[in-house]
Length: 77
Image (cartoon, rainbow, N blue to C red; front, side, top):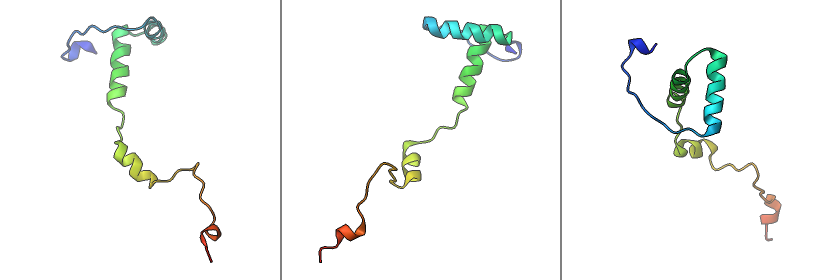
């Protein structure tokens, strides 16, 4: 699909492992290395980003590992 879109040539450095894995995907799917990278980048950029404030608010401070004493232990009388 590169023929129909504006593009910018970009060089990146990959680890040997990243390159090996991208090459595997490229061969398995019958697409170019560049297409694999573009698809991966699109998937990353299209993900839903949730702010840390939203995550904290959704927990309401709940900690499933927290231990709270019985209320009986609070009585002093």
